[in-house]
Length: 175
Image (cartoon, rainbow, N blue to C red; front, side, top):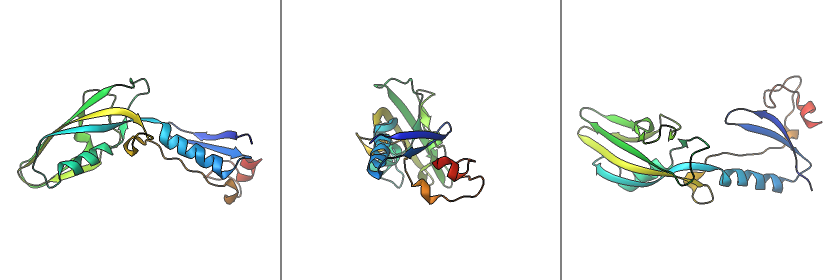
């Protein structure tokens, strides 16, 4: 059984396609391959120098590892990128966000800048150093950088232009 894939729409971070004449099993295999085989950077090791916040070091290390990191495709596979975080709350409360992580490589940084890491109370301090490495989802879930799904196109019923299939009539997409 041949896999017939026709691109429908593509943006800088999304790709939509129409697959004809194939089974759900094969589409699920393609979905799982996309999720587990795309390379991504993730924080792998964290060294805490000072942490008197309300969260244990292990919880913070887990949160840091799950922050999606952006990178350029030409980055070396064996690169180790150092991130540093040095924050202190002198008065009131302060929420520490992923944007406060500073990287040794300007191309590799937190993809989403407003991910809360921890809330510090008065006179609490957090100082750490983290190492990010490149990997794939087969190695660990923290390296999963993509979301992939599929659906049956016959479920879409539209008259005229359809926003789900990107301004084409669904009956035209199926022919």
